[in-house]
Length: 92
Image 1: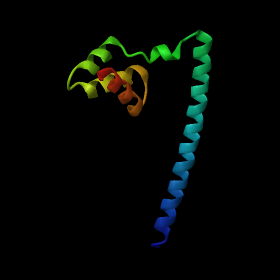
Image 2: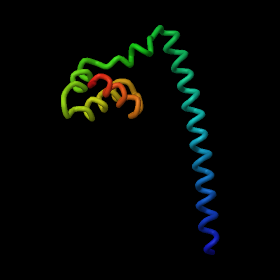
Image 3: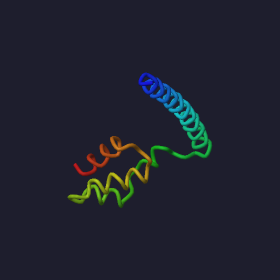
Image 4: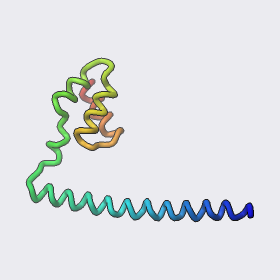
């Protein structure tokens, strides 16, 4: 019976990886559709990434770096690494 536990764990891992692949494919498809829709509406995606005045102020405030990163991520939906790079550039 001891060998059944690793087999179940491996099967669960395989199922989880397959599910992640399915979700990744759906997300990629959604991103393509969103890009098409934004282009159709004439939305400039780069303009959406411009930090708000609140974010700029937070970025220049000593000790508010984390708050600035959080605010910028909420504004843009960017990941942590990308948002931190922008905030570091603004603070610098």
